[in-house]
Image (tube, rainbow, N blue to C red; front, side, top):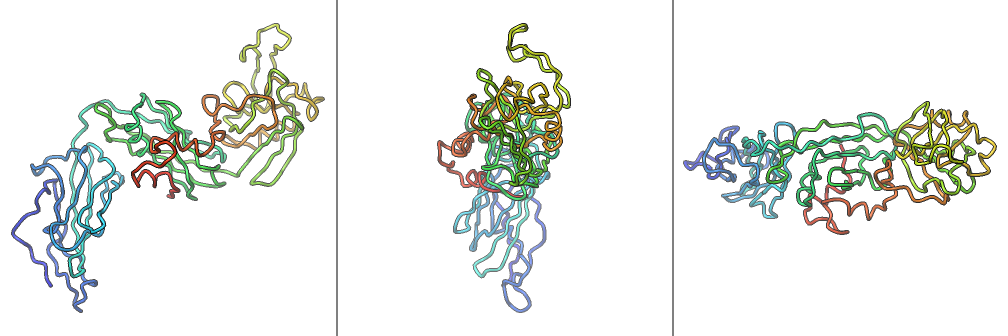
Amino acid sequence: MNHTPRTRTVVSCALLVTVLGAGMSACGADGDPLSAQPYDAADQISFSGPTDEGKPVDPDKPLEVTLTDDGRITDVTAQDATGRYVTGELAADGSRWHSTSPLAADAHYTVRVSTEDGDGAPGRKVLTFATSKPTSKKRLKVTLGPNTGTYGVGQPVTAQLDQPVRDKAQRAVVERALRVDSVPAVQGSWYWVSDKELHYRPRDFWPAHATVQVHSDLDGIRIGDRLWGGKSPALKLTIGDRIEAVTDAATHQLTFYDNGRQIKQIPVTTGKPGYDTRNGVKVVLEKQSFVRMRSTTVGIAEGSSDSYDLPVYYATRVTWSGEYVHAAPWSVGSQGYANVSHGCTGMSTSNAEWFFDHVRPGDIVKVVNSNGDPMEPFGNGFGDWNVAWTKWRTGSALVNGTSPAQSPQDTARLQPTAL
């Protein structure tokens, strides 16, 4: 059976269509249709779009490919010039495909449609089109963090927005466009910390030695009536060994683990009554070889019995409010026996130097059995890991209550992804 060009043209296909290839025989030399080269399926499908040929496509309108003849659509891929794919759904009978994610404005797309006729012969159609420019110059800028580099297994990914997004539907558009891919693949989700900040973390800590790539597909995507996505640089994180430091405030000991193996136990002192160290999981924020610590910075009046002004060495910061793991040579006599600090975890200078040399930002520092308040989930460092996974999931705009959103694509985004 041969497919020869027909006199009618493809209707609703006025999107700068480029047909690749001419009509070809659908049967191979041996008469087996499955061994044939794909024929030109231009006269079998229609492609939704504007009525005036040659004009850019409205990016707010979904793509739709419909079969107009016997057979079925077997596959559709739509991709823009930057490599972004458009997700879509194919009807069970293969009669129709439609997009389920928005198009970007001012972009160039290539759509590849594969079909087969009633005899099983394969067909192909390639369409190219451009989308119109955004109707507004207002762009949402997203700054992804942290900076590209190597981090511990507890490092969350952050997204800072330069303007608030409050509407849940608009948040869903933003969140769908923020991609986090890892090797090995892990289950993870974004959490809206505020109208201008999102955090992403896996269900559990990142696997040791994982590679994490983060990028935004928001450029040119319509978020609201007068708001469109802007460009954002991508970032790549390399995850190091699984380092965990667990301080037991009751026994005054810090136990250091490397990939689950106990490496060292260090006598420490934590916060005394009234200044108890926060309980819970914290993440190393930064390391400073020298810090001048003054009590006035944490609200202790100068001249009071609790005031201090000290040079501190080998300081590993775990909260922005001033909690560190650091050298405290003045309290060596109490280390391993009593809690006498103003909230920090103090140890000898030699132990503090060892600790300083063996941790990096993103490593886990956990405190147990303290009388202090729980570590804040947000705003004072990275307390993200103190939020139960079931609650964390509800912080996503793609989740309705405790149930996944209706869209299968949204459900898939909350499952493991891999590079």
